[in-house]
Length: 131
Image 1 (cartoon, rainbow, N blue to C red):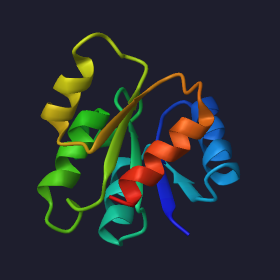
Image 2 (image 1 turned 45 degrees about the horizontal axis):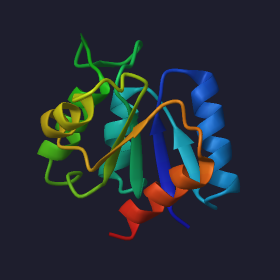
Image 3 (image 1 turned 180 degrees about the vertical axis):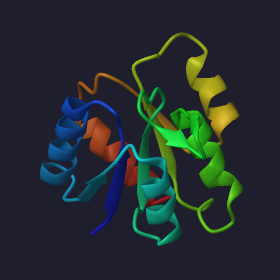
Image 4 (image 1 turned 90 degrees about the vertical axis):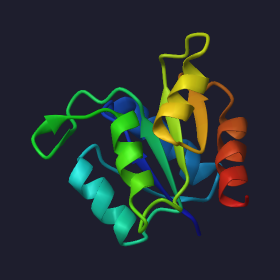
């Protein structure tokens, strides 16, 4: 069973994503917005995929506020964690954002919120795991 780590600051989104991933995808789900926990779990090889919210209100790393782009950069620059696929999840889906977010972060995919098609959401995550 694959484990999905959800990095999300909205408890409602966390709950909705978890429910979809467990029920439709058969995934094990973990969730946190604590950056140190994210990095520790990644280094321990726990997640098969990380779903990363782009705008995080309460996430800090080494005393500085960080967003999902920065956390993804940290993970992708570490030889121990760079292999873990990161999918950015954001409501800020303006024209051109997807490309710039992917280029800037080094993420492996992009899903815009709200997630309307639950099966497509699960299928896109499975596709990243199986690639």
